[in-house]
Image (cartoon, rainbow, N blue to C red; front, side, top):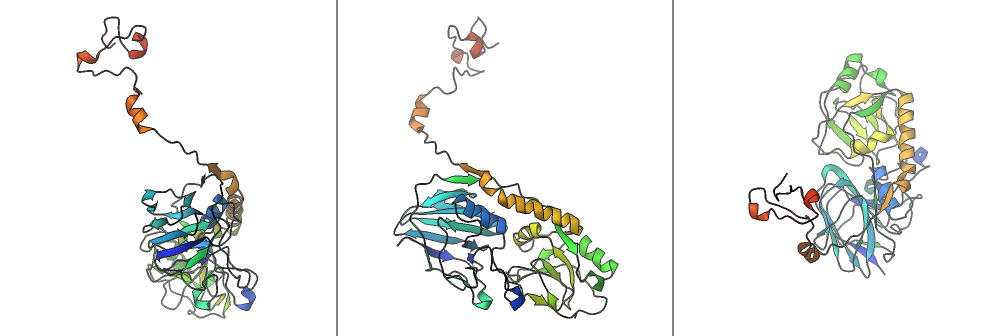
Length: 358
């Protein structure tokens, strides 16, 4: 059976899909890809369902080897060096890993997570309707944990489909947009202004459950305990030490710390892809503005198939190029011996009737 074998891989890498839905009222979090757009783009390149399971690759390098047949894959997300058997390959495109060859990926550059989709998707036993891994809860398939060297991902043999690339919008570097609340009344106007006017960095101790922020201390008006209530992806809790935590895909479904703001859905992937130690700011917008941005994001996801382009492979014959006079009648301005006059070509060659440059 054709399979993709994990030859090597760093931490924070696992199988993720669009997440498991409909059970948060029972305390079961959604999990799923940290960058849903990147996962959807990778799957779209291969003709998979947008949120089919793929490999979410953390900041460190990884390598995958095709076994018992060639495997077609697609790469998206945070850029990093990538090659198959020593030949560089491009991101935001599909490619074939030949039988026995290895796709080698370096460290992430300017981001945190890359996505590797496999043609036909990753197969496994759904747990509560999803293959998404939540290692703390022991959920996910085919491995309910982070991926390790030696793991095998079943795959179908590569089809004869043409390779494709996808044109995604250029990345933006503006502030991470938030809607204040739902407990922003637990903070003074000065504390909220400090939150919005300050630069923040993501702590290296962050994970898929929450991004711990490094910056000024945000003080509470009435203490840091509230009656536990529901959370969502992007909720920004402020615990007793005043250091905000942005709740991410493996968050708890309820929490007892005041939430000063909530990251809007379209910007949560941008925050997820922000490397630890990189400074950024927050910007407050209205609920109406957030809804408008959410609609734009949904439309972007729907438009992914329209952004596909077939890759045209052009084989260059280097020896033929060496033999061809592709530059036309070239001359050397400081060497009169190269000022050849070709009858009928004086205009095209830029020569006067004397045979000298005009």
